[in-house]
Length: 356
Ligand code: COI
Image (cartoon, rainbow, N blue to C red; front, side):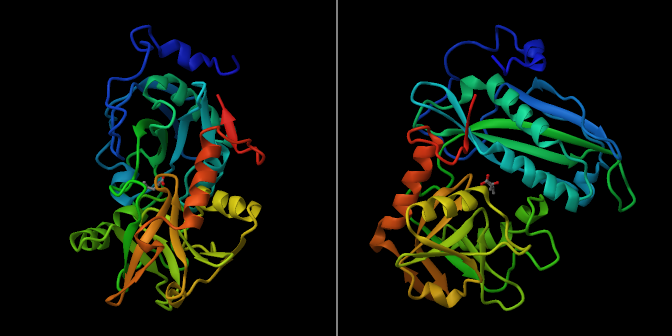
């Protein structure tokens, strides 16, 4: 087939392509790492372009203690999923979008990045090499985690002399422990995720570790996660630690617009198009926290969280509830539309799905 890459043929042995599925309980997948067989590794010196990478056995990597990523956080990650169709074939969802987002982030972080073609080919090779870890149809997905890191040694505050593009994959189920039941959010009025001019709009590593404290505090009080507000006015919705946010009021669905502090989610972008195709009016704009008061539904979107309905949001001690303890009808409808498309159960009119 067109995906018989030489990289792959060189490393996969008959031991590894052992038939059948990996030996795990496919019915109890959460969002945690299950080590798989192969990872993709490609290196590049500063000032040069990525050339050729290879599949290696999944395992630890060696880095200088003074690697740029370890010392100064020069790094990006991506997230996308592969799913198994009913007929067993494998589907990727809009992988070129992740490639383009990584290229944008790399520009901001002064790193070279793989071309869209290199990225998508590497994702494809890694998924095919780890085929036995793709959950059976309907049981979850293979989460694909590309990384781009400053792997060379550096002490001065400056870009790393060498960069590594790496992809590992792992089978996953639901991200939130609630599964597909509504989640409960706390608006943190003190902690902000990103500032104008900062790096909130790219998937750089530091945007994620910096939420742990607020997230942990919220979880200790029984909330699922934190919804952050903008840091200038402390008034407009930004995003949740791991996902974008949408507010539903009648036929209008609103979501914070992309203005540098919000991660341009691929699920976000897809849900906007799906909702419009279903007749909703979708607005990308400043969404004030006050709008939560009379919203019908709220939901979060992300590759990991998919479409997660929000059951309540607590703001300044006041708890606002949505969906009468269940999943809101609009959230449910969009979740079904998106996941059916990603699993190959509905016609892909947008040309988003890549069948391997
Ligand atoms: C994803 O949704 O893929 C992400 O990258 C979010 C991450 C915090 C799990």
